[in-house]
Length: 557
Ligand code: 2AM
Image 1 (cartoon, helix red, strand yellow):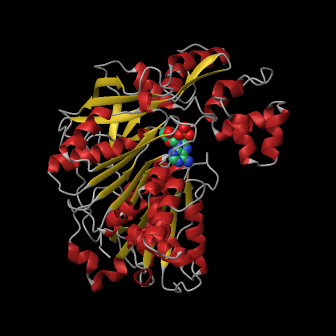
Image 2: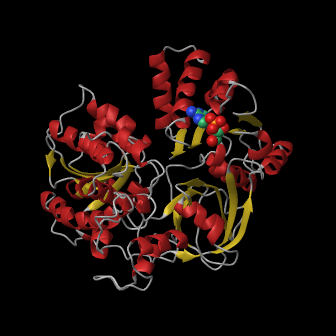
Image 3: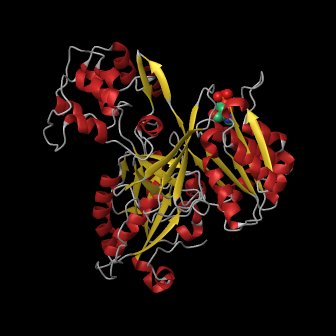
């Protein structure tokens, strides 16, 4: 397998046998690029300690090669409800098998990132950590499980674990000059965002659509920022003033109320620094313990995730505070229950080759009424309603190296992107058009109604006419009595789809992870098995091979 030797890292140092004892293999499992970005930070920390970092995705590593590694740092996120990320699945199959090799000579540590809002928090990292120990590997440092605000704890952990690796590798530290860091330009990462002028905010879905899907364009001309088709854009939202005001009233405070321990006023903190829509886990637990709400107490006592989800449906931070007016919270108590405001990442829907000075997003904004109030998604409503043209929201490029066009411009593409899942595929098509790539392109798109929800229709039609888009299959679910979904269209065209795979086709999926991507995955197995005349076992091997060759890639959330 190919080594992904890091920038500034001479090839020979990563590969030479004499450097083996100081090599640190940093293996990541990443679904959206966060764990991969952490792997790059870890590599810098390793280099500063005189280690030679070699960064690869877990699935790039052959199990026999893995068994020869001496120093291994695993950095993995968890996908969905406790599953391995896509580029760690083959690795997990290999090490969890009863035939897995013993790893007595290995020193390892695991950095797990996850989201306490989901079941199976950091489960992928926990499983790998446990399994490596079972196989005889020695843990040089205790695993860390990070929540979505992982940056600080994970960096602190890297600072503590790296000397342990250096010690076990017999490295004295600072042997290699740590490579001079390129100064981060604004927009290059989350801690240093760029103020990008919003130049276009256009509704794509029809007026009568049940959905408000919008096309946004931001100006990047003086930024020097570069992105690739497949990358995401991080947007740092600002909370809704109406909700901030309701919370201030609930807390019997003014916007300018000072908060002990903070330099900014309460109003500023609620507007710019903390999540105030979705209730935090800590707030839910506090309410469960301190109010007389029997229903919530019951759900929490039985640790029943599904029931909690049902109970929480449509409730935000304000609703929770209003549950029991008799037990009021002091402001410092309240602040301690909030989580920091997170950026939202959206798949970029443009190619920079087609739009050198712009970046485009395609976002469905979420709005609904409940409990006498208009409520909505934090960042989608911020962009749709509160940022005026000419204003400059804070953005940054969030690379997703695992979701890329094939290097071979002749390879056929099969793209499954219903709803806003079309975003990266618009970028792929623009990119292929700009490159003059000759490969065939096949898009499956769908949504509720053709009349209202057929977004980018004119662009797609023009691409069909020009021949760029070889095939376009549409699935409008609610235009007939029985639902028709993209996977139904795939199955109808199964013979052709399998033929494209046989020609070296790359299969891409973007959009809803919990239902759509699972059903599309099932349809893919069914097609390979039926039209390839394979047993389900051989079809599974075929899909594993696609994954190994990076020909089955997903950007799902
Ligand atoms: P529905 O809402 O009519 O059920 C984009 O949201 C499209 O994805 C909609 O047409 C939606 O259909 C559809 N969709 C819902 N569940 C799906 C699933 N399990 N697989 C594929 N598409 C799905």
